[in-house]
Structures are given as C-alpha cells and as structure tokens.
Length: 403
Image (cartoon, rainbow, N blue to C red; front, side, top):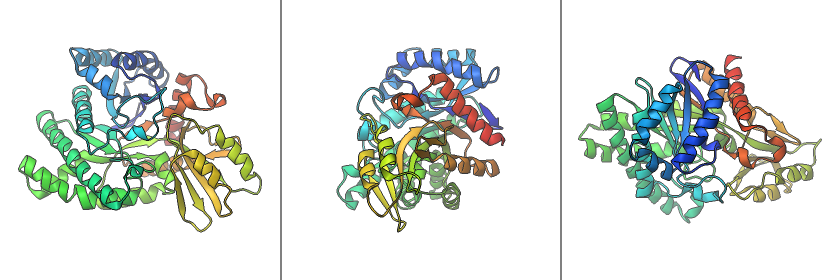
C-alpha cells in the first residue's frame, strides 16, 4: 500500500500462526490475498513478512524461493520489510522472555538473520529499500550486572558487523540497500532512546567501525557510513510509549546523532490512569483479562513524583497500581490500533497519531507496518474476523495520513 512516493504501508504477517514455510505460505494465500483485495485493489501491495528460522531455511531450499517470487509477481505483491525478531515458535506456545532467544551474542542469531537477508535480497524489487527488524540485542533480566550487559553489547556489536559486511557486499553487487532495524523493547538490553544512542556511540561507532574497517579494508569514514546505512532502528510506537517518550523528542535525538529509522511499527499499548471517576479496583479487574500466559506483557508505572517503575509482566504491574503514589500504568499488549479505549481502560493510540503527524511533516522512514500480533489472544469481545480487523487497522492509518 503505497502512501506516497517511495513509502509503503503494510501489516506484519506474524499475526498469522505458522512456523513452517508451508503454513506461512498457506496463510499468505488466504489472508494476504484477502487483505490486498480489500485495501489495494489493482495496485501492488507490499507484505511485512515474518519467517521463523525453520520457515526461512525451508524457503531457501530447492526452488521454493523462485516459486514464491513468481507467486508474488502473479498477484502483484512484493516484500520490502521482514520481521526477524522471533526466531522460533511464536503462537500457541509459551513465549515470554524466550522471544529473545537466541540473542545477538550467539552464532544462531547471526545465521538466521543472514538467511533472512538472502531471502529479502532475492525478493526485494529493484530500486526499493529493504529492512529486517530484529531484537534489542538481548533481555536485561538474564544478566546480573552492568559488566555483563556491556559484554552482551560488545559481542552483539561484532555479530551485527558480520551482517553489515554481507549487506555492503549485496549493495555493491546488486545495488539493493537492506538494513537491519534494531527494535528497542521494554526490558530489552536496548529499550529507550538514550540506550540506543549510547549503544551507537560507545559500541557500533567505536568497536564496530574498527571491526568493519578490518573486514572491508575501508576508511573509518566509510565504515561509519556503512554502519549508519545498514543498522537502523525499528521504531515500535507501543514500545516507546511504554518508555513514556514523545515521538518528536525521539526523532529529534535520533536525527541529531545520524541514527536512521528503518521501520515504523504502528502499534498501541494498554493504558490505565488514576481517575476520580473510575476506581483503581475497576481498572485492575479490567486489566486482568489481558494477563495471559503466552507473551510477556511488561508494565511500566509512572508515579506521582515522575519516576518510572518497571515490572517484567502484567500481574506485577496490576498489583503496583494499589500503591498511593500510582499515577499511570502502560502495559505491553499490542491491541487493535483503531480503538482508543477498552471499557475502563485506554490505549496509547494518541502516540500513534503524534508519530504519524510528525511523519507527515518529515517522513522519517519509508517503511510503515501495523503490528498487532496479539490478536489471537485478545479478550473474545475484541476479536472480529481477522481479515476485517487487519483491513480496518490499515485503513485507520491511511485515514490518519490523509487527514
């Protein structure tokens, strides 16, 4: 769904269960074609493709990749962005913090990402930029000290530079630009703007430059340019809302540092605020329906003194609402973006509006992707036909951009 020249709007196919290539392709043949028919008619429609390690390996085998490319061409579809964050099973199993496994300190994460790079380089149309979102390096609660976190960042830097080396070669050989888009997330090693900037300043643009110079035999200047071009940020609006950061402030800081946003993931979080009209108990009871066993739903509580308390999952956050200094809770639960409130709860939809209004002034990314992967575990009264829900989300974004 092209929204202006060189900018593309889609949805992330991780909303559809399926870990094998056969299952992924079946969902694309069903839901992908239905969504395209409803939102783009005769125009080309881009897909935000999510592949697990298993489905990526299966797609690369034999003639599957060429056959898939032919199928895309026949149906006037294309792939310009991929979700390379979840490595393994993502539906109908307990995921929780294992969504970060394997992390960027491991060879498995590098091999998986390079498989996605190979696939995207083959599928990406000529003259179009491609991106692959990925994890925020690792998960903070796996480590006990700042020293351990620094070691994670050191190892992750060298892993990422290994992928950048391939991306530079692909650009030289094919002319195609592909970037890895790091996705900050609550309780990730990178979860807010300052942590992202520090990682660039202290690691990517120090150790990373030296490592890439050695690999490519290039100057420090060109190594820096390669890193800034091929390692970008996936700006998930929900995640930055949980950090209580304003879109305009985030973008201003990134632009000042030369950090690019490779993809905007358009998503909304749950929000609950102290109110004279709605009791804390009512809000706690309403939040309980979102406390489910599959995904992590980190909660961040804003206190009356302006400080933030972080809780690794929703139940701890719900309990913390009873404290006298409670002011607001935001929970990591991707809910349909077109609904501003849920019974006595709100959503962070307004942050999406701000992010899109800012984008209309200065398009800070050419990739826009709706991501509501929690659709299958939403409370029953919030679920509608999945195709209609996806279409409604895309149309809501389109209407915001047209307003």
